[in-house]
Amino acid sequence: MSASSEQEKSTANHDHNKSALTPDHDLTQGSIPRHFRNMAVPMAIGMFFNTAYSVVDTFYAGLISTDAQASLSIASQVFFLLIAVGFGLSSAMAALIGNAYGEGDTERARQIAQKGLLFGALVSFLLTLVGLYLAPELIKLISTEGPYRTGANHYLNWLLLGVIFFLLAFIGNGILQARGDTRSMQRAHIVAFFANLALNPLFIFGIPGLFPAFGFNGLALSTLLSQSGVMFYILFRVFKTGTFANASLASFLRMEWQIYRDILAQAIPSTFTMMLMILSGFVIQFFLKDFGSQAVAGYGVAMRIEQLVLLPVFGLTGSLMPLAAQNYGAKNYQRVREAAFFCFRFGCTMMLLSGAFLWFLGGVVLTFFTSNPEVVRIGASYLKVTGLIHWAYLIMFAINSLLQAFKKPAWSLLIGIYRQGIGIALFSYIYLAIFDFGVIGIWLGIATSVLTGMLLSVVIIRRLARQLGVLAA
Image 1 (cartoon, rainbow, N blue to C red):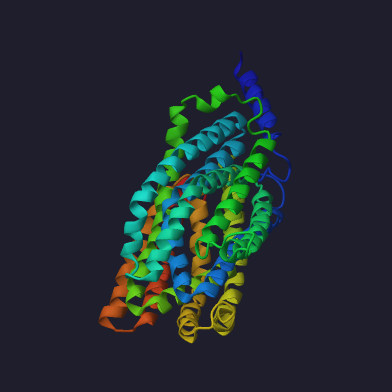
Image 2 (cartoon, rainbow, N blue to C red; image 1 turned 60 degrees about the vertical axis):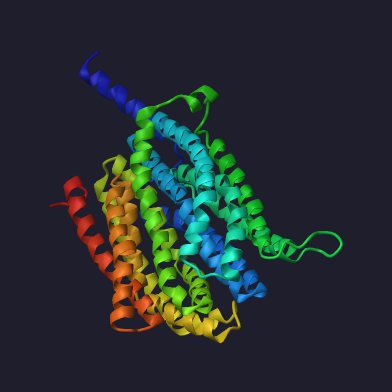
């Protein structure tokens, strides 16, 4: 067969594989702002309801006691540390499958999706066992003896039963995001929020004579039930896309070692990056514990509010990854640059507005979740400091999405080691031990690590983009 015939065949196969994506899901064509809007708005709305889900838990825990709010805060951090591998696998699915679609290789996209789901099921079983052994020690590390440590252990024991629900939902969402589908998870989060809103009071307080009251553990039971629904719906959407058309059980179980290696190479750095993000919370809790449960509760409630305000950023930067991944796979570097700069410009504008909101109104919002004036004072001081650096978060999150899209997650890990490990611990210690700033010193430690981490991220992405040809030398 002639070289020209081979080229024609390759082009035909590429066009055929590209046709597996609808116009909305083919991110190598069409308006970049429109693609951002189609992905970021549903993603932000979904994240809003997911964060509001946590806010509902915080609200009901506050009805029980301040200790219950502190228990919820530290137990949630331990749990998300354990399932950080789910975030890594989700990022791996979005990046690898997105690249495969950009290259026109639909069969490889299908194989990666199959192996990712199987891997997630196996890992969820192992994580449950690890959690049962390690979780009590982690909670002990960031708490003092008393009711809020006991409550955290009980809550976490229930929540460990749902590891598989979270992991498979993460992986399924990564598969959908690679296609530009962020609406499915949006719908799942909305339904889960309303389910949690109804189930929390039912499981906590019960119905006299009809349904038993589980108290604080009712929060965990509500989460187990609602998150299982998220998993089943997301997997239903994945199978409905046709990603697994004509797939057999044998194809799922077949050992494709190269694909597993590719998934692990992408997922491991992303997992450790997320672990570092969560571990930074442990470092913060370690410093906070000396200031009592009111400081722990104030930070926990303030974090929920900050997450709500950061939702547009999560949606915007989360949408950048599949956009950049498909276009990087298609070697459309100009389009990668356009998407990145749009994200930077639009996102920084939003963050200036969100920072102003936290500075002036953060303390008022806190009063909706607690009547304890000390908790409000401590939480408001955190929101004022973090509101000043939201623009830096936007830049870092966007750069992290680009590193994932370029299949260079190890750089994200390096940045995370500095910012969330070394930076927070070092600067918080300096402000507390040397300058004796009190609780505000912890907030300043966080801010300093974020700003210096952002500068490191900018240096890395510029050099890497030039090496890969994405940015002209």
